Length: 140
Image (tube, rainbow, N blue to C red; front, side, top):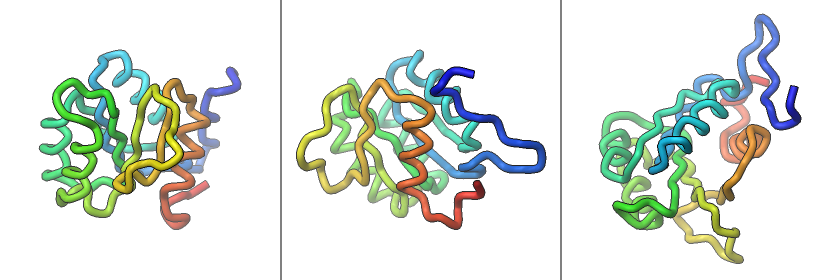
């Protein structure tokens, strides 16, 4: 098994983030496929959209635990989208994460709970989600 691959659940156990609701905004098709593939073995219930407008629609329809916002979206600046998502019904209680190929600055904008630098691995995602989500949500 590759070092970065998520370990499958043992029979009778749940994935570590089973039922965690995550919204990801990623404008690149391959990036959306990769994020979905990396989150699935972790048990994350992921909604992955291509642009800011779709993210806002989803955040008006249902609540999320974590929201990933790509900072390099073509339709809206990532920081502005994050502020709008944080004010939405579905994002009000979510941890919002900046996702970018840029290095983490000394201070990240206050709307972001964390920063995820591309490229990232399944282990990076697992560690990030463990930091962001309450222990009661985690089952392993």
